[in-house]
Length: 131
Length: 488
Image 1: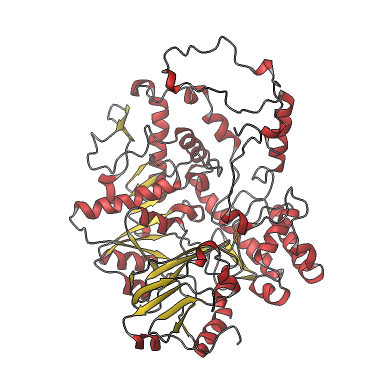
Image 2 (image 1 turned 90 degrees about the horizontal axis):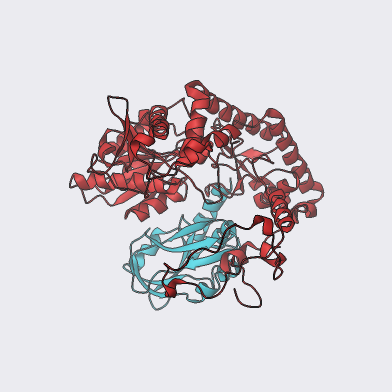
């Protein structure tokens, strides 16, 4: 499963989370999610400083097919957003897990990430949905 | 080529010019008079005729092609509706004409209110909203007015199933509500457990389409109504798919408090092109005082008169300067009168029969449907996920290739819940031969996917344009023509 990096955490709604060394979490949408959406044409970023609850809709990704909400995986405060996406949303299509990150969050509780799916569980979820 | 690009200085057609002297401009203050002439195209009569005839020939329309665009109900618009609504007595009436000179048209509107009320099972109907979107807005604004009037102002959330039309969350947001999405279960019904968890003192209401955009009837509608009502919320019926149940099942009986009706779908008024439209709203007991004005009432003497803010002080207000889009309302009234109550049932019968026939034949032809164990309503979903995996062809490829076969494409990639989907709605106005021809086209395309995939991937081949650059169109949309030399 090369499409699902082993060092990330995942949500049932196809976001990924990477805990960084400085205590923040980086959040994006998965390669699988961008595949389903197709060519992205617009990304609405959250505001830096916004307080998000787990499951809150915090960003919008719009493709030629659909507009979808991005849900905040865990509660926390937005500390950075990927400004490059404003001009080039297609970065997410190109590199969903890398340059295509959407925002960075200072989590209320760093342990909250353990409630999310691991790579195996996420792979199973996709397999189930494929069924 | 645009008509402007045919233009040559000085070219004109005197026979089509307005006669008489130039208008007297003395009354208009100088600062409002334009200094230069507008950049209109200068063309001959024949150029105009050819230009627009060619454009009309490029059009894919219900008058020329089968148009199975799911959730849009692209049915045939009988010509009689148009010709009767164009009678001079209707067309020449001034909107300020007094009631005593407008009894005929008011009788038509009164009757339309009444027929829509009966067929939806609501207490009263207002014809005022001038489009489906405005009908939705009026509906949710009435829900807000109801809660406000009771001092129940903490309700700030509208529930919307994830299979809903995109307009529903947009409307709720427009009316100042937060939107909470309710998931769908594996059978295509609203997830009742999730709904029970979601309702509470914050619930203003739920917006539902029944049958849903998944092409199935919501079987738990009674439980949904009870759950939402017990929490103090109201039920909003999106009339988008009313064609499936017309005259058979009434939204009022399902427990809905408010409904909007897309006359351009179910009642066969002209469709698309940005209007004019009409989106009448019907309400149950709770929302009766808040209906938008004006409405038509009938006095004991038999005379018709307008109900305005004066007679209905709690109304949510006016949505237009006059009485709605009368020309559209008239067409719907004529259509409803031609059908009668029995005819309306036949609409639902044949819309559903056609959809189930087409679904069954496409399954036999090797296509997968999204909910194989469910009976289709007036529409159904084909998913091409298997073909995408096995053959590398997508729903978009099929949609584009269908154009070459002489069929308008079904709705693609909606609802969002089903990957690689085509949402197919044949409507009741298609004959069996047309449905069979569509099946043959789909079989032909599936065969191409196996043997000549390049042909499919590069379709359409017979249209004025090939594959358009959707990404560029979305990011750099430019619809404005500008003259090259003088800048217009």
